[in-house]
Length: 585
Ligand code: PEP
Ligand code: MG
Image (cartoon, rainbow, N blue to C red):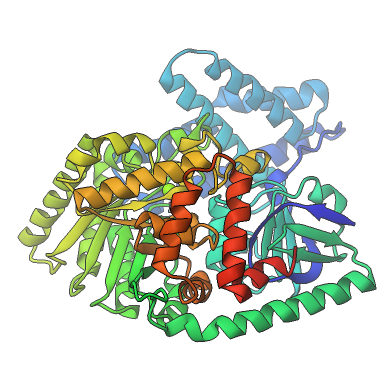
């Protein structure tokens, strides 16, 4: 059976279905006879939840402020609230309902009560209730959030959705593939699977209800095709396509450490996007200029709560000591929120999380936490010759001024405390919110560089959720508005003589690279796994040709027409690259 999704990363692969459905638990509903033992089951789950929260609270006591700890205290107060406890036990008694069902009814009632009060603090209360309710439910269902997996080798993980920090992604790098029902091309889950070289296809409708454990499955990350229970013929074809794809990849291999230049000798800086120190060994094999984006929030996300400054410092130190201190190292400050949430900090129930409490907004509202991160970066970077600090999701001038004030405060503290730190660094911003185009002039006086984050920029420019498979067909690099906006931005940055690079996934899109070069972009930050393909293409094209192509493309109004034109253009100049993308179509 053939199904279609959005191809994300890796080579064509196959394995056995491993259904991973823990995120979408359903609430069992049945009648019980032994009421006291059902009440006892609920009380035990409640006690276990209190114990879990107390543990988290204890681990945070030294690192977060009293205000922040209050959240956990309020969770515990709620769990001990006799009204809440008797509401659930009454529900069990009254309707002879099982504990999960009773809890579900009470939670729904409380949440809607609080949601209907037009006051921010009550809305927050309803979120607290929902998150705490989920924890009790997990304990009732005896599901652990950090379950120890026992995944047989060669499994293709199938899930409804997967968060970018799900332990299955973080810890199980040997899986043969990942397929989900939800998620788009530029979601953070997609970015993580690219980083970790996990073959993946997202957005395959109904796959969790169709696939059965242990069935054979093939996934094709280039076309987005998934074949469930393939025939012998389909298996044979997949094997031959994989062999061809691997052959082509090994022919690109010599480009991994060649100078990055076009045929007419223009140098292009290729930098790397990384989220884990473990990615550095593969980066070291390339001729990359440095790290153009280190997603520092993964330090926090991996811990699932805020690690103290000392832990952050040690993790960052590992990054600096594993890489070259004289190369460019760009650390992006915490970009939490959106689809990168840790319990108790950013709100999981925001109506529009990508438009909400994210990135620099989150950091500036928690100066104590932000200061700790800034201190840990500056301390760990001691000795680095080319440190860059990058602020995500900047939407106004004040955010830069405030951030710089916090950097100054951190520096004063470190000087006072006689702690060594990196004294010289550049500060820049992610260009993700389109409106800052209009204040770039003034901003450029405060910052040293901009890096275009197309994953967010395009979602804001086209009003198109980057992680929603239903609108993934609109999230197009070849959309003329996107291309014209990028052209204007790159030109403006070049006129203002402010350094401009691109670190969104578009920077490694083979069909976009020649157009971006033609616009005057010379710095690209990409996943290390895309390095050799990028450099191979570069060695087949000239800057003059790119400029001509861009000029023509910018006059076109149809994305399809643009794609066809570039496709033909690449075929004529870089046949093997063209073949790599076409052999599986
Ligand atoms: C971007 O938005 O393009 C970007 C690089 O940041 P992230 O994908 O982490 O949001
Ligand atoms: Mg972004």
